[in-house]
Length: 161
Image (cartoon, rainbow, N blue to C red; front, side, top):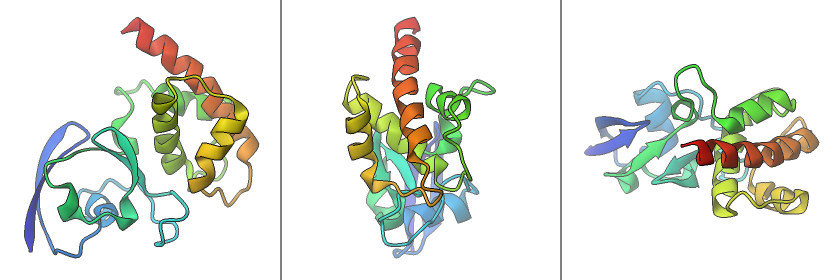
């Protein structure tokens, strides 16, 4: 057993976990943050993506002990109360949600993509960047449309801050 200290969605957390505990299981089972999904257990689908110190990481292949002291953001931590994050709103408005299973990982990955490209994206770049996220509904058109829409919304939101 190890003790892991994290900041999760802005709250300090101290948890005793077995050394083999994966971050996704710590989030889901210990902290009851079930928005992060386990889709494949092989790090191929991206349903488990969270932000670790601001960068998108697949939590199903990250040991909880590896992120001791880190700042973790999950899908539950990106909205401001009842106000959706611009990426969440764009997914809703562009029908990017589909069945919803992959959506949290897609949104967390997409936010990172927009940040890394400073909001300057085109369809080809978004499609290439989302290759690590699998949508079993195979409806990438609306997901890509959502990410492009959100890139503009995020610029507006950032300018307003």
